[in-house]
Length: 448
Ligand SMILES: *Cc1c(COP(=O)(O)O)cnc(C)c1O
Image: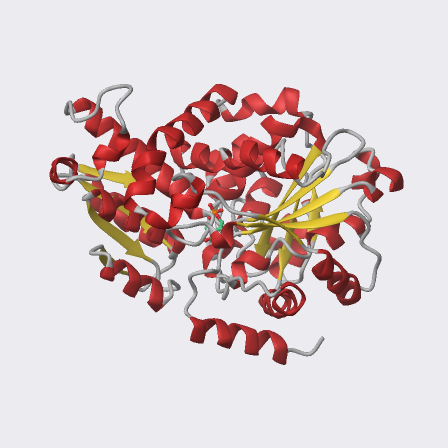
């Protein structure tokens, strides 16, 4: 029995649960999805909140440029390129044996400066927000100041009396740890057992305390939260519930809107945009999708992608149990090489906020992630970590679906021929070369 029902009863109510528990790749298109005008208020946040986050990142740009010279070209704004992926689209057509009309792009968050993953959006934003609050409260900053002065001894001494902590499978820890340590905070990252050694080494090299646990992500977060609760000088970044993380991610959409316009990719009712977002606990893809819905309304269709071994968000939304369930409750082991997505229990905040705004959810097996990793490297010369490939099969899942989804959404052949498909490539540029070579070898060695 789990949550008042046997597994068989659960499978009767939601046939998709059989695929999930059998670890078979599957897709579910949510029939309860609603127009953006109705569902955007579910999050309890609005365009003003995202504009506020965007303005804060703008205020911090002079500081970021000063503290991280690699951001000089973008004036201290942490943003990633939008890359065309025509050759990869053809490779996907061959792989899935079907025509994939429309144009395919990659949003290369893998190449975000400072921490090389989508976490450089939300994670860094939340640390900056906390630093701004402290600096204003202690009279170190005043409205209208040049924030570059935070890159100095006075600010570091203030922040040095405060602590920042987070629980992470790796990438969030890298973003929070590097940013917090650079500002001068005492930073602690609570790492789950699946975190890669090189991420721990990199954090320690930045002066961050790394606490290691022989347990999964949810347990590492719980440990971190408990330790921080007893310490009023400690700010705990709560990946499962943080509105600030969510807003930091959401800022991506207005910047993407400019990039798409510059690239000549139209988005409107006749030119739909599909965004395929790898999902762990949900904050990253949830925040980005919230921003996309604000920016493009019903013209954008968002799908979440998860490993077959960690389909926590799909299970949470499908059953309506959200953070009350974990994949382990259904006998699914949460063991995947996609370490950024190795999350067994979804964010209840994101699940509830976004359940009427996300068109669908699908799962991808680990072998397929590695195959796609090698295919992308061959087609476009781009190297990503396994998690970042979860978005890649999305175009084929949408175009090959048979659940009445496209019909329900008015996505006829003409509109699909004019569509833009966007793979959110969430991480990978900081993976050490030897590790990347192992990934590529594994992907190339798999039978088609
Ligand atoms: C964290 C992460 C994600 C998913 O973000 P969540 O906020 O955990 O849902 C996707 N890809 C990579 C590479 C990540 O590190």
